[in-house]
Image (cartoon, rainbow, N blue to C red; front, side, top):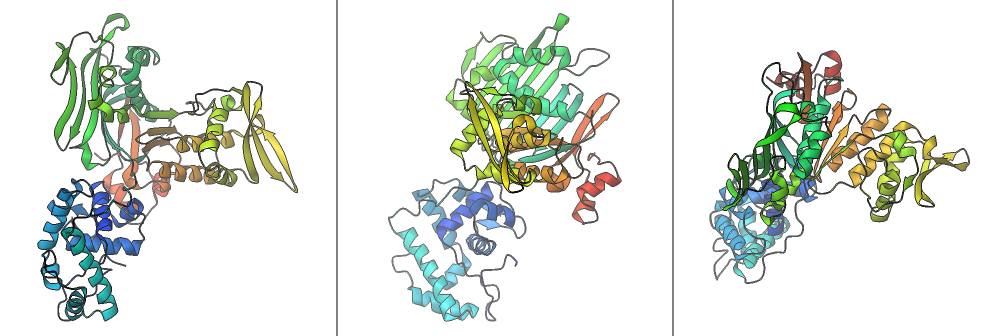
Length: 540
């Protein structure tokens, strides 16, 4: 079914297009395209509409010159204006009125629609039937819709209360690294769902840690450096003068927004003698529509926030600590909302002290506390259904209290009866899978969730289930997965795959080479088959 679905061409006017969609649905599609839903499948996910209904609404948006394109969609000038208006406002009505007044199809089918003497629905029906050859019944349905457009835009009532906001499609990040551990130089765009592939020792963990390090610096720079073995454990080794460590991260809700609508934190650290170090430069900024709405910058002469100057900031304290105290930088929280999990099954097996800290810890040591919270707040089927696919016969996972301690209890079908198992009796793979599922369910909006090598100790079928869950979770924020498993790569599109290489003491990381992308797109090989036949290469 092509994008022409939703109108019929007549022999008298083969170019005539007749819209059949409500204005609130048109506005929803315009908002979705503006938020990055550039394809039919993405529009279906954003709006919740069926494929057929998306076709109808897109056609109406195209007739009104709000959306352009056939395979990939973009907003027109009028579409951009509409997307920037407040829902239900007079500005919104004004843009829609302008689009109708400029529409040649509506000038023919419904002349004077927005005047004090609009055409009747029956006269619009007759014109549609004449111009397109549609049946009277179909023409009447579309005439009624067009007539309603006129009443809404001429009347004084609120246009519509917007049935629902577009679904979140995750966060994009642009990461620029210089001299961080084994990485000499890298500029990477992270999609909401990104897979980093490379052999052991190639530097995948160093790349993931750079994102965590930037978060840690934002909260306590001294501890961030010390926990990595001091500045010598952070900066890349060079035979001559010590290199400055530089990290620059932007975050935006769309890829296009990384150039014009983003939050940013960049800093440069210089090392000195005897393990000393200091911030050489730092910038925190919020940019909207290519204009800075908030900026905080530190340099040799002190720190400047908007029109105010601060000189008391310590050399080893991040400016993000200061920025977080001002409302202008609320959006910058997306930069610090980073969680990485390296799950440790041995820690997950131990009884755990009951605690109010319910977010899953990086090693999963508080899995019982976190799972109890998930059971209270979400449908437990979201845990049990995928776990039952991974652990045959699994019927329940509960949390039991023993004094101040909590422990996991698994119920599994054994022939004709149910058997109880403690966490100490469960496999590493089952516990790791449980931890990954809980981590995805606890994701907050705009969060970057990092999972390293989810396939460890898990059979290929289970790993694919977890991979699909991680991909689904990326719609709420972003997910970064590191792996060296060929079996998992087919779940990722080639656009979201980053390749990691290590040579002569330096890590290179970048998108999959165009030549290999073409092989995958042409269906000659899947990504996993390609990896098995030759090394994946970075685009030069």
